[in-house]
Image (cartoon, rainbow, N blue to C red; front, side):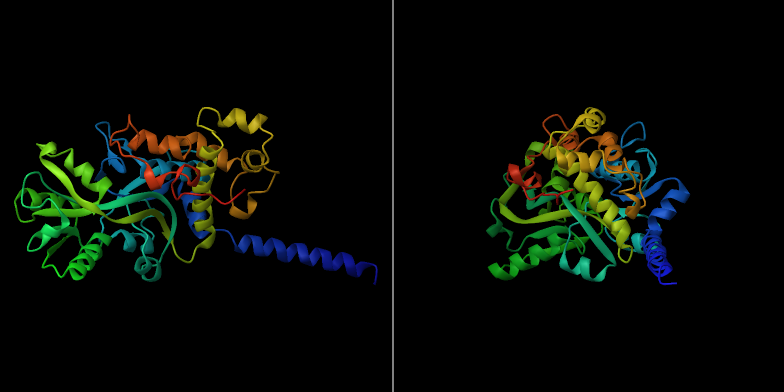
Amino acid sequence: MSALLPRLLTALALIFAGAGLAAAQSPTLLQVQERGYLRCGVNPGQLGMSMANASGEWIGMASDLCRAVAAATLGDGDAVEFVPVTAGNRFSALRSGRIDIIARNTTWTFTRDATEGVQFVGPYFVDVETVLAPRGGDIETLAQLDEASVCVIAGGPSEVIMRDLAAAASARINIVPLGSAELYREAYLDGRCTAIADGRAALESLRIALPDPDDHVYVGETLAYSPLALGVREGDDPWGDIVRWVFFALATAEEYGVTADTVVETAQTTEIPVLVRMLRPQPGSAAQLGLEDDWALRAVRARGNLAEIYDRNFGPGGVLPLERGPSALWRDGGVITAPPF
């Protein structure tokens, strides 16, 4: 009996370890795999972030990040249903299970993190909060916003920033909260708002689509920085781990110069320890995430590394050229960094 005891204890330990591993599997991942596609909540029309082109294909940085998650979890970067969500319903859509990820341009804030049933991943893009106003009008500096009407997205960070600015400057700014960028565009063009406060990416997307884009300028200094992040449902930590490490894989690929075109060859030939662990791991090493071992390779191959995704949409040849600035990797002066594999 004494000789059998160690074997029995070992067997029990393995059983319980396996049970613990199974219990840690993500309910969201299982639903996505059973469904056969990822549901990604996106902005219905922000240039550079997410919008359908003339062929009906969704393009933009947020769309590309969703494709990377789909590739990692399903082996197919096109296995995504893009679900348009608004600033007002994005969190309820996530909580209800209508979407698996929020990839709508969403700023990571304390209140949202603590009260909306969401955990954030990123940031993947650090936006610059600023103010757009007509060129040559009465608004050339932020001090001149006194007595002006400023449109903002209701409940967004720009609303809070403008209220703080007004309080600090003892200014009487008429803040006009609206439900969408389309509504503040209409109010601005109709003259109901003298200016608009929002992130630079959203405002530039609006500005270049105006009939006379050069007649509208950014005034004053940068108001704040807004870290845009992916959002996953709170309570499914394994799913959060999956989305988080897909993002880190894209950032790591950029750091080591691995691209969509070179990732397969790199996986076969690299001797760099970090890349070996990420792209050519030990068999079964991804089981704790419920993924195949080549999940990271598939994510990078789908739409490229983080720089490729950024440049496709916001680089010099992208649809909405914007300096990368704080959205760059830490080594390039930005804030994005990935923990080591």
